[in-house]
Image (cartoon, rainbow, N blue to C red; front, side, top):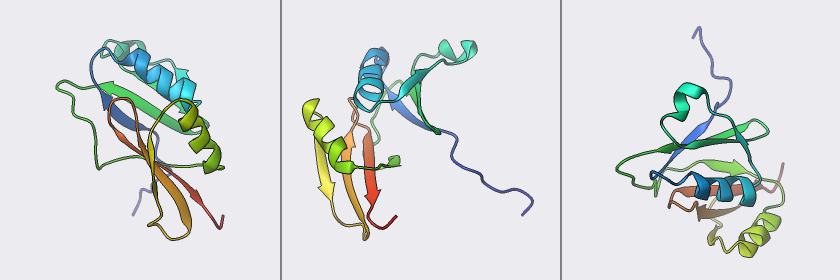
Length: 124
């Protein structure tokens, strides 16, 4: 092939209209992402964008809104136990899943019901 993939540029998750402040609390305050400025032309659509290192999450407004219950982004983390503690402090519910060999992982949902996976590889 003449083309090749480099990386995923961003992941977009949907949220209901008027949910930007809730998204900011979850993605910036709880998960530690930094809000990044959306281009002026895209601001009109609502939503907000976040970044941590090379990872970008775009929260887009969708009407009618339905959360992603099965489809999800998976975030590789270091020190999953610390993330669990942080979730407990902020009363974010999560569920353990030991079905992936070689990884510790949990699932949580954002405030809009979108499924999120967090995993830590045991042998990296």
